[in-house]
Length: 295
Image 1 (cartoon, rainbow, N blue to C red):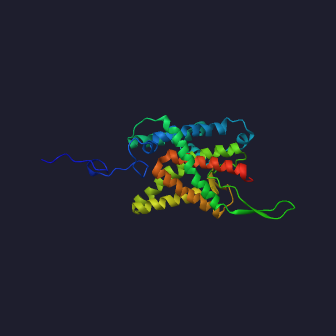
Image 2 (cartoon, one colour):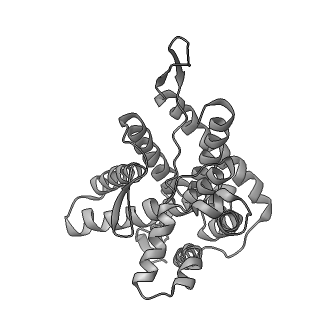
Image 3 (spheres, one colour):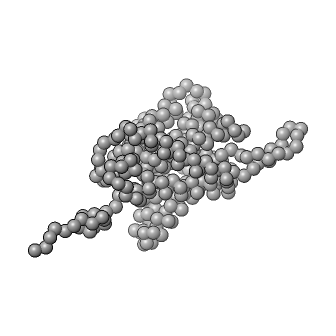
């Protein structure tokens, strides 16, 4: 009489199982495993979402009221919802709900526990901050000296400002506006360029074109990273192409590398940590630029 079939490390009865986003399987209920759960991404990013909404609507500053600082990826979600027939009023508040609904769907699909340990929140903030530091160091490495000619003085060289990883629908003109835009970019650019675009590209390259899994992953990451970088220079809003910043190969190269870095984080640590790292990079870069570089 045959004994019961053993469960393999790949799943029940030898069938291979896949997680929703993470590349590595961490020890069950460990900090690393818990914080990759989509539910953790919802709770962790909720204060960021609220801060972004308050920053763009309710803070009484001339900069925010006049320039209507909006992340381009956020505007894309608005326009898509309006195209699908959503009223203008609902379209203004729907993008945050889209983030939450997608993450709830991933949580349901993952079949992982539905609880959040609030003691994990501070370590997640520290982890995102630490993960942002390599990008800060890399941005300084990519940062080429610029020639500065003081009035009546000799030309000197100085480092240019650290490239931001946030593309706004309008140029931000203050420290607060830059921080608000950076927080929004962390959420909505990661949603569009990592969570959505990489999945779409995988379907295109693997299922439609027929590339093998490894090549499809590499190509999807590279294409999404290049598009992520390009949209900081040329954006499509309202059916028209617009330029947000002059094209610079150094900045384009840095942002492409950053896109690959975020894709690796997304595969290993999930959406919450990746979006948080993106937001903290922009916050740190904004602070460094404001206090040490001439904007």
